[in-house]
Image 1: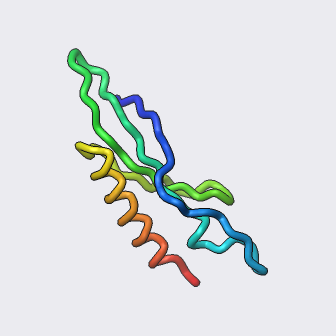
Image 2: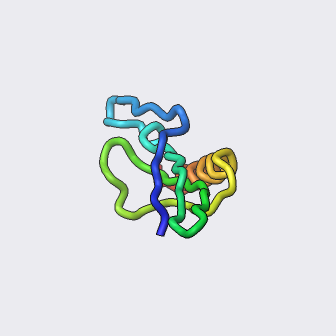
Image 3: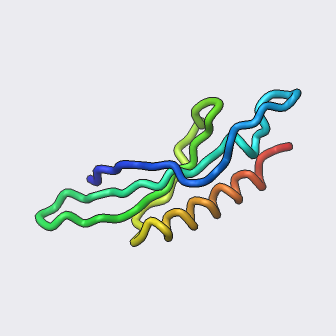
Amino acid sequence: HAACAGRVHGDGIMQRTKRGVAPFEDYFVIIKRCVKKKKTPQTHWSWEIQRRSKPLGAKLDGDEYATAQDAKLAGETALKDLLHNLPT
């Protein structure tokens, strides 16, 4: 099992509108550095999409990326796909 520590990437800021929070501004990506505990610890990176206004009903993430940049790009792509498919 891997232990992970995360940090926020992206500049999505929750903005209020007359109807509440703008949905496209409410989501963001966290990049995590994970270390698998073995005789020789192995580091990898993962991403997770989160929502500021309330927790998501399911975990949206990806794992096992060699670099933080790879995880960031994959997470941003997944976030764009999610936002594109949200009902308007």
